[in-house]
Image 1 (cartoon, helix red, strand yellow):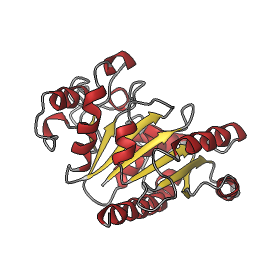
Image 2 (cartoon, rainbow, N blue to C red; image 1 turned 180 degrees about the vertical axis):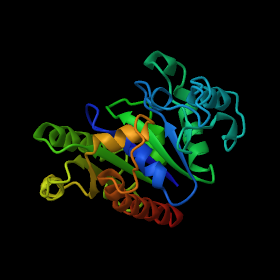
Image 3 (cartoon, rainbow, N blue to C red; image 1 turned 120 degrees about the vertical axis):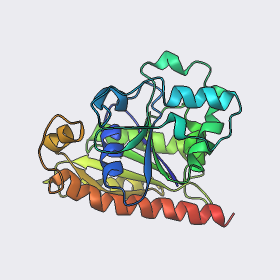
Length: 259
């Protein structure tokens, strides 16, 4: 399955969300850094041996292969393993590297969806005209990451309204869409408030749960801390979120199979 993660504005924690969910995903998984503004996986991580991640081996090499018409399912040559054991497709380091990617996006989306493993794609901030639209359209689920604030909710609502038509949100056979909140564990009302806002806006989008804010655990994900993570607030909350995300994507797979 292919699951696209995105934000409506700012940096609410999409990369961290993909990182932590990938670390505890129960089946074979690949994290693809597709952020058009420039990805962070190659900057945050090293290989298990401590070597830097090769920025040329990832989205750049995959797009080049797609333009040459190389078999769409051949992803192995574009994948690297980061510290912690997660397999990734490294992103670009600067936006201008996306020049000429246009025709390659549909082929890359098809390759990721047919890879044989679950793919968590970090699509960064999604705006009208985003080049990653073929990935969102091909995904089995689209998941937005946001934080609990009036401004964040307003931007999320407007972005979902814009996507309602291209993704056919709420219609039969559409790509299912969900939202993950990144919020303090003490915030007991954030999920309810967001769900009410989405219902009031008549957006058929699921609130999938909350990832606890836990800076020390996030530092551990990037190798900056030796703290045990399995009992951290971040990992404990992520386990519940994984179940919800997989359930949403499984619904998308079932819907696509029934078309």
